[in-house]
Length: 302
Image (cartoon, rainbow, N blue to C red):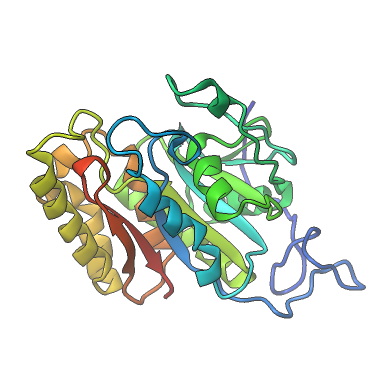
């Protein structure tokens, strides 16, 4: 069941708009703002299905090891442990931008044909209903369609990379859907609406793949085409914000764009991260070529 919001809900207090528990509350019931570090917005590759938790057979056994090592080291690159994490997943689309508001989300095994043990994985990170409310309110205040889903769990775009990056599963996590329109400008606007969360110690993760064409992996013609698209994407991300937004909004004009993304749901999370990324250029923080296709991760600290 999804609850569509017609107006913002007053679920936060104090001038700084910090949240109720699990954030530290002061004597007046308002959360304290001490020791809060501004978090980045990061676009990361979530790999192929449950690839980090199985013996990979579609190519060399070590196909996903570099991506796994990148994810394992991600937390150490942050300015402080996040107070919460918002994850925009390429595996969830709704009519409105929808925040999962369950307090104890289940795992949603939305992959097929993998070993039986990968459907018994666990990762019991808590949700954060108040943060979900705040996300929906920020989007509504920006004039964007927003909703809550109290039943939505963690799809594999959420739990697979975060189980590697944050194995203790102690940080609250709120998944956020894409808009089913997959409109680039709309997702850049959503990122801008959510940017204030970064100042409250909340990490914004966009989970997708910078190359996602399942029919093109392990094919000779893919290597150069994927490299060309990845080089264009890296240059676009590293451009000043106005130029970056224009380039990403027009991503279909990039070299081999339709080949890299026959359907763009795995790329569009990047636009949310870029929209939330501030004015400074973004930067590539990881790249590899699993199954013969260049993929990258990008970070925005502006």
